[in-house]
Image 1: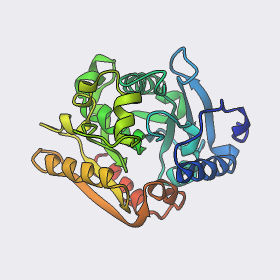
Image 2 (image 1 turned 120 degrees about the horizontal axis):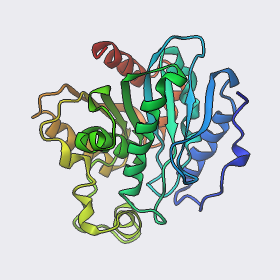
Image 3 (image 1 turned 90 degrees about the horizontal axis):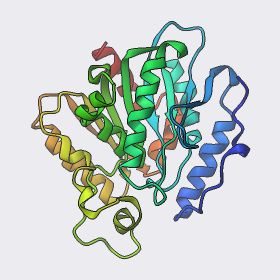
Length: 290
């Protein structure tokens, strides 16, 4: 494969925060630096739309490996799968394949469109895992920010996975990073992200309940390793704490980690370092669920 060319990406509206723009610039610059030999496949089509694509990264010389499917963030309204490409080398060092899907964005395509796309991408990858040197029976889900929400929602709504033709038992664990895991807000401030969820992201206000991972914690049997930054947004920190409180009442193992000194975007960019604690937790989870 050739190096990633970000000049071919379709333009998107400006991001709402300068910090988000800076994050995007950094992540896309790092995407250019991914060694071409780790790019196993680019823009694999899992549907008919322009957002129905995923990339696959890994060491081509390894036998079938467990797979990490990682969804990008962007408030459900922005984002590129290329934001996650910089994780290719650290994930390959763990002896894993990295799969980074795109998904439809709001407000043109409101939730649950992105959740439907997560299921479609996972179904397609599962059916074609051997083609990419991956083990379809060992899949781990993760994501950052909005991608963390989608990863955990996909992991916990196991009946949806089964209905979509995915073996729920193949999903071995979930590691959401800095996700808003409870979409409900009683009185969102004008101009806030919380208001945008209702104004731009959800089709109907009452969809905030079924589309919140928090609503699907009961009876959970899947290991979940939550994490957020010490300086993450209050909304993110609280929703992770509430999610942890729910998971503590369920039969599956769970963890909640607060990353010292990190803000909302640094919880992802810190993963350029292969020695980041998150990778250690991923490696331990893969070993424990082998």
